[in-house]
Image (cartoon, rainbow, N blue to C red; front, side, top):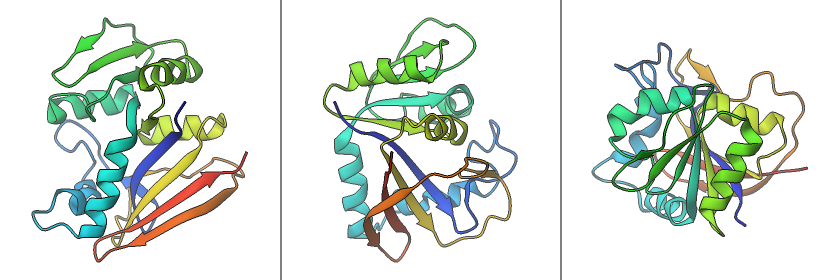
Length: 189
């Protein structure tokens, strides 16, 4: 069984999305700045290496309903080419896409995680979305936290690490490029 990883880009002031998330701004206003390092036409080789390593480890994904709702029109597929479990309160039939399938789970994060782990096999489960990530952190279900720290201050939006209580992390890797600092932590249980 692989690792359960929360992989997020974050501003220096702790925001993982800008304000006013919606169909027009799926990452909130100004939030796309957090991902520019991944989508540039001249990426830093260190950033390319981090992205390639992350993509190679993805076996399945867990997203929240909000991330699904605002992301799907832009992705036009699963967010990674892997089975994706949507944590939701509204039942829905599976949605087959070109790369993989969305499965909708209404019975909580433990059930969503189990479904994702079964789909991932020995690869990792990536957790997406701030609220879903917070739920996994609070429940002690996360093994690693990967933060891509972007040198920008958004000034508002969605924070990842607010109101979580005490969580111990052990830094296991730091990779610095001109565009972003990649920080990898193991969650101490």
